[in-house]
Image (tube, rainbow, N blue to C red; front, side, top):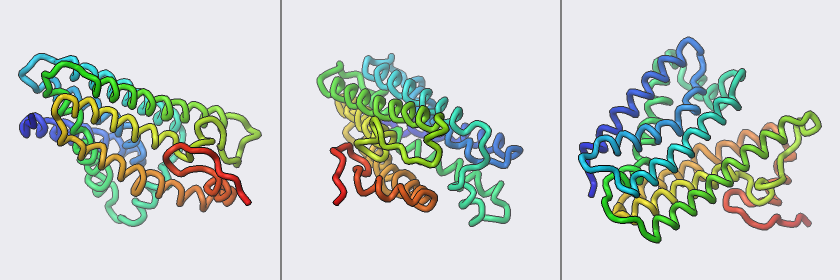
Length: 260
């Protein structure tokens, strides 16, 4: 059962978290810190929905909260570690250049506010899971397995890439081993599986309507801020990446193609 009041609480708290992070970004002159906030917004949303419900937490709610918390904390810590000591991400520098003057103020809604609204919509499966009192079933198990597959691809891919970049002899080379052998974006594919897994858990409790969340996440990953945007910048910086593109699936894992 959908609850507009509980869902509205989620938007309120996500907006507040985004505003606080925006304030922190001002003295840094770096809005890239929003990337560390992104996955934490889902944890905040999930716990807000759970704590706002008048009913005791169900097994489904606890399952969804546990999975999103593990996923969100791992991703936020990794991104924070990866970005330490770096200047503002080129994607955000481009946004800054297009929106001067007064980008510092505009970033409140162009970057931080937008992220909060997107996370709020995507978090619908967490709302659905928190409101369900039905016992756990097969779809919950399927959802947990999909989450596990996604978490393995995402965390494993990040770990493999970090090890690859840490070796001086790999400087300027393209990572095409491990999970990266089967998909050019194992981390994005992992996110895809994580959120459709959470949807299966929510749908098992009757929240079929929450498909809007993972659907939006899928569009962002494949068509907007994920594969499309990242590959445009990589291809410009590394011409050899084009050969990798010809040999390897963009998103869904598959066998490596042979070049003629």
